[in-house]
Amino acid sequence: MSEQPILSLRGLSKSYTGKTGGVTHVLDGIDLDVRDGEFIAILGFSGAGKTTLISAIAGLIEADSGEILLHGRAIDGPDKDRGLVFQSYSLFPWLTVQQNVALAVDAVHKDRSREERAALVQQKIELVGLGHALERKPSQLSGGMRQRVAVARALAMEPEILLMDEPLSALDALTRAKLQDEIERIRKEEKRTIILVTNDVDEALLLADRVAVLTPAPATRIGQIFEVAIERPRDREAMNDNAAFKALRNRIVTYLSGLNDAAAQAGESDLDLPNVTPLDLAPPPQAYREAAQSAVEQRYLEFYKLRKVYPTPKGPLTVVESFDLLMDKGEFVSLIGHSGCGKSTVLTMAAGLNSISGGGIVLDNREIDIAGPDKAVVFQSPSLMPWLTARQNVALGVERVYPHTSRAERRDIVDYYLDRVGLADARDKMAAEMSNGMRQRVGIARAFALSPRLLLLDEPFGMLDSLTRWDLQDVLIEVWNRTKVTAIMVTHDVDEAILLADRVVMMTNGPNATIGKILDVDLPRPRDRKALLEHPRFYSYRQEVLHFLAEYDHGPEAKAA
Image (cartoon, rainbow, N blue to C red; front, top):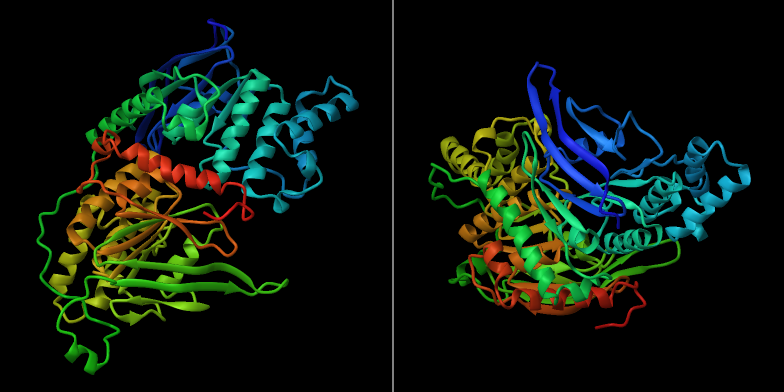
């Protein structure tokens, strides 16, 4: 790797003027030197200007001040020396893999013969492992395969610098891991300079030579640059036992948490939560109510030989088979496993939103067969009414389960939970005007405001960058600590699973998915992320889950645990 910079950013600043004339300062004096052959990862909060920065380097937007120098010369718009891979695939759906890549090659390599261009297309497609899919169209490809086409197209331009703007953030954990390995192989074989914008600390440490952390918006700058002095190759599972990796990871997470704490959003409330009980919309029979003199504490939620079968043109497909789990009242369980293992299927059956093919689910001595507000669900997409305010969205459920209370008490319940999730100043903001993170806060407030018997969370932070995810994890922990509602959370994030749960339930691959292993998380509550990273058992728990997932990363034919 050359010590001379191939790319230099000097005092790079960029602002945008809104429709009302207000000015938003996005970048404020970015300085960075990138050496030839270096891999730089850029980490930043949501809205910190990461895409603006990468677009400026690509020449797609013009900075207000400062300069971008390539080999000491100022760049002048986009050029083939900088190849860009976006978060979205941006493929032409009517063209094949080969044609999508050839489109870029024909545009930038007009000086080459048809045979040379065809050979270049073939070589780059094979480099990303898609030699078998040349004639397929995007609709016939998985999300991960489509992103490989985008990478092949960028590489086929033969750029000096490969720019990647969160190319893996929309993918599931397994596909993301496989593409991380692909990017590492490309780095090794192509010897290109790479700048990767990512929201994943582990991804940055796995791939990069240096990690540049941006400060929060507005007026973003590079707050600190961390050298990743960890030998290559970096094996994902082995890194968990690497002392240098753990020390550097803790330093970066602590630094990011400090930046996040400076703009903490989780709120206190000046209101007292009204001492009211929600209406039981599905009461048990009178005889049961007379006989039941004490609340159920143990075996509060029971999954018994749960089974789900879907009809298909090729015959019945068993997605979940013999899923058995007992939960006590107030327990928090994380459900983790690869895509397609039936995690969300189990969750939707528990919510009463999906019919049960065999076995059963019993909640508080009642078999679940219909949906209702006693089972609150927070989905990956917030599912708000965009024309309603935050307060109105939460009030929809509260009006139904507290019809016997006064209007003032219902309003206090709504406002209390909006305050708790950090939206005290945005109660009357329309959902359509909110960021994804703010909408998900409303979804969390809405779920807790129902005072449910069971809280079900289906990857509620999956669409968010990792820094916003941390913030909302803290919100969830804080509100759950007050309510101790029985909860199940589906997640792909190993750290999230351990941070939140009393037990981590690991599922085998589908079809015929079942519970492969259950990990008891014996860590003190309330939990703090920074303290957790320093706990002697945290990385051993992490290793257990990572090892289980690694065993099942080859599809349904992998051996049973």
